[in-house]
View 1 (tube, rainbow, N blue to C red):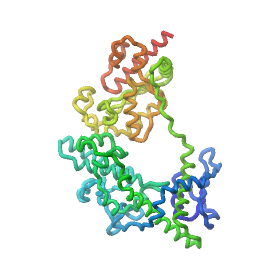
View 2: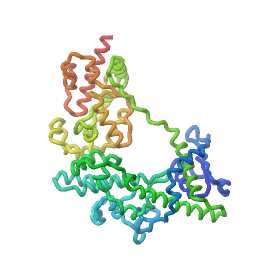
View 3: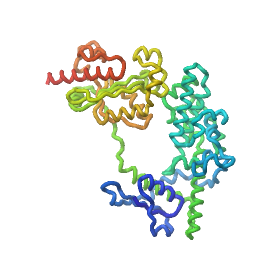
Amino acid sequence: MSMSFSESGVGAMFKWLAKLFGGEPTQTREQSEPRASVEILISGVGENRRRASRVVVPQGEVAERLKQYDFVLTQDLPPPKPSNRWWFDSETKRGGRAGSTTPAESLSPFLGLDPGALGEFSSIRDWAPFPDSFTKVVREIRARIREARKAKQVHEELLRALYGTCVATDFASSLRFEWVPAHRVAQFVDLEDLRAVRIDYSSLGYAHLTALGKTDTKWLVGAFGEPAEHRSFGAVWPEARRNAIARYCWSELAASNETLRALGQRPQSMHEWLEELVRASIEADKTYRAPYPAPAVPEVVDLGGASRIDAAIAASRGPFIVADLETTGLNSNVDSILEIGALRVAPDGTVEGEFSVLVGGGSTITPKITDLTGITQKMIDRDGRPLVEAIRSFLQFVGDRPAFFHNAPFDQRFIRRACDEVGEAFENRVFDTLELGRFTWPDLQNHRLESLARHVGAPPPSHRAISDARATLGVLLAARARSSSSD
């Protein structure tokens, strides 16, 4: 990769982009000349490494995108004082300056707790506005909540801390704009803007908080009831984000103009600097994101007619997957996945591999669930894997093979919700052996998995995911054999 750009505050962003995508900025003669825009020359990788392509951005597209930053042009705000900065990055040696804020002080506006009380959380002592750091804090608070629930102790304050941390997570993520990382803008958040914030579950709700998990929501609703309304942090307190972005832009412009003056060049106006940033960001969007196709829309096969039955039988004659889930309940919006089981099957019906995983993440196992499945709270706490690991391992095991479930819409709802939570997608073709059973054996009294397995002589299901997957496979192979004999 090679890049040429004017020596301005935007240059730092392109140096970061160059490192991110495997190249370094190239010094050119053009750098000594004033320029109103940034040109990026991109060299491909692999076979196309030597072929350069220039990204052209229409001025109208830049002007339209600039409109959302009108607030930057109208308020030249100075950087916050060190004692009022929400966060210092490692370059300023956070906490190394007299009077700088501590991590506990930075999070206290969101958590509603005294900074001294927050010191007992080890994850907060090393907090920074990065996703991994927020995840550590959330995990620690969730663990405290589970301990309190198990001991039947009052834990409303911990729930408020969890809720506030999730609000802070979403706020930090919102600071990213164009190609500027959120943690750079976080240095320009003034605590004065946050002190006016009152994190109130009853008025903010949970619908617009992406950091809240299903179990978190269930705990909150159980403790505090349904909120009066659902609003986003940005809608209620837009000034905190806008002021931080404005401070960042004006600070970068000042540094850029200082360099330009030293080089004997004309300083830029904020409009010129911001236009350059937006144009470069659009170029980067088109260059680095355009080559990657959008995720395919999952093909959901509803076996409602003979042609779809034929499609299911045809899919079972190639490599396929049979899978099953165990859950804490029937509602995918509030209940959770407890266990995933899957079989990788060859065209001749031979099982090539098995996948089985218990899923942790704060689920409370009721006696009813234990009686039904045999899964205990101790098993989940000891062997349960985080949802993100379980889902990604499952998707890797499944690959691109078609998947069969018994009562597929139920399993699909849970899988889609879980994939949404962890940023993945389940795009495989899905077939339903319940519909296949109804089509193949229409005279049976019912078509529950247990009844079908008994009818065809398959291994009986036991409400454990892997055993139910084996029963489903038996039903599928019997239906396939019956279809072949009737051809």
